[in-house]
Length: 216
Image (cartoon, rainbow, N blue to C red):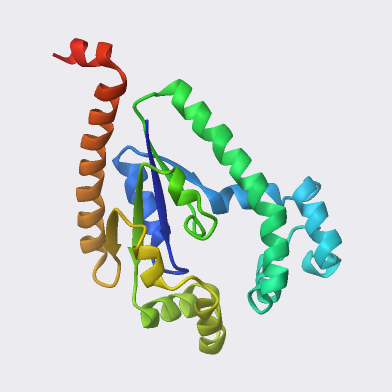
């Protein structure tokens, strides 16, 4: 198995890259999707969030108002730390469970861990390879306006609260710029996936001599 971390700033195009990799044959485990499942009504994480941040973060039907919660934590580092302490250990545990499941099913799989805070929480050190998706700030702001209906000032505030892109790039084995046409992003992502396949094969040969003899 080859474990690959995929990360990038908010609205950088990480989800687009993740979908391309999945179409190419990778197994994708998305931290944000896991987080959404963890905070469904009645789940322990949802109950703890309501207790810590107040029931005002919940809608009338009991579901989490993610935008309202985000507005609170992005403006207050202490509250963001509280949120991370509640969610991150649970997300990490579920990611590990899913990795184990994939490994049992397909030992040669390329597993993509799609996580916005991969580097911030130090999880990139557990990866075999790291992909960072980059984008210019003005592009990210425009996407946040179009996608989430945010005002430019709010979008800039969210960007300012994140780890600088330059810092993320220090941990990158591969970089995918996402400022041009979609076709360019697709082409670069497919090129990287081919290299990942080669590295996965080399890794499989190294750790499984029997597999190597069978292939030859």
